[in-house]
View: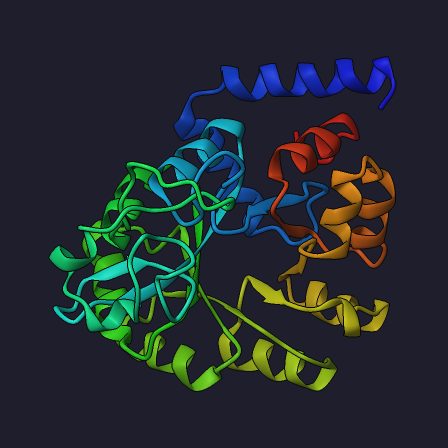
Amino acid sequence: MNNKSKLLALSALLLLLSLAPDSRFKTTLTNFHDANAKYIMVAAHRSAHNGHPENSISALKHAIEIGVDIAELDVKVTKDSVVVLMHDGKIDRTTNGKGNPENYTLAELKKFRLKMDDGTLTNETIPTFEDFLNIAKGKIMVDIDIKTSHLKPVVDAVKRTKTQDQVFYFDNDYDALKKVRSMDKTSLFMPRAYNYKMADSALKIFSPKVIHIDETYYTPELTKLIRGKNARIWINALGEPDDLIRKGEIEKAIDQILKYRANIIQTDEPEKVLEYLRSKGLHN
């Protein structure tokens, strides 16, 4: 990145930080509902977890601090019906405990501590979904990756926190999304589609504001269909694009991601992606 680009990125960051959180969040919501806006949204995979445990409160706070638009998270439901954040089917990788989180009560899970990616133990514990939402409220959008069959406690937590306008549910199981809709008709959705026909079906069933697609079927025809229905296009930088970003080849990575006009990027490198997009006037 040249000096001029760095100066533009710094100016954009200073402008962002000068805005009140409520003002920034209103801008995020406006852009989310405008699929044809120039603004490229950034989603932090399992929140902004560089330097923090994944799916943690500290990762969420960091995401808010750096101006991420969407915090992605994964939910499980405990034996006593409390929704918690956890990606894996077992807590072994991310905590100093073992086993299926859904076989524990919340009090039992709270005895364990979260690990960093390198295995270093922290003082943080597995957060509840409701605590996460209360911190996120009015500051950042939330993408719920449904990792449980117990949907009612998840929907109830969103209702209790009154965060329906900033939360959306993600799944490739359309029956699960329909169940969520039956419990709260105001719910927002991000269906996953694996081809043109599936995307067309998802648009008709859910009238979503965003469709999740993959690189394997990322085509101009597909993105034209989705944007034509005023829905945003979510694509992952996870894997090869993020690897390129870490190697300093961010322009190549972002060009690849945006080539057919996707406009939400999920990444494990939100800091770098935000800096680059701001330098290009795409996140201002």
